[in-house]
Length: 137
Image 1 (cartoon, rainbow, N blue to C red):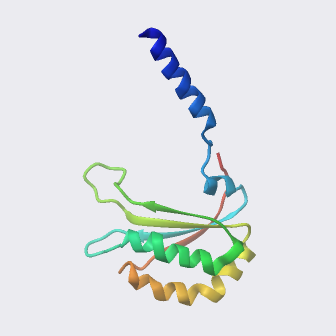
Image 2: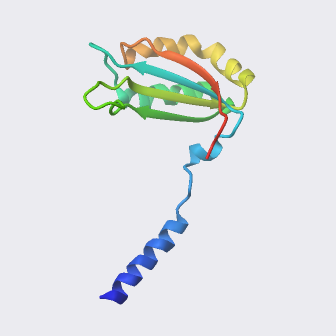
């Protein structure tokens, strides 16, 4: 039994070594990039269709932004940091660009088209924040 368990443990170690340490999107995110976060605040009567957002809206944005977009990620809100309190955001979407000029050139001509799609997945007025990535691990 001890030998069999040792082989299982060894196999798990070997498999773990074969797994990538970062996802593909994470490997493309680098210090100094521009991160555009789109927050969808929770609240009474707020709705959010994650299936539409992840399979239609974000792919639409990616196709419009083209090669200027380096990565995108989506967070689905699950809970707040305090037990019993509602979560602050139903979802947060992130776009990563090499620099501010690339972001502006990608978003500028496409913002109206993207804004027009928002009612297809939510009744929430999104909040936008543009940041610089200062650390990636």
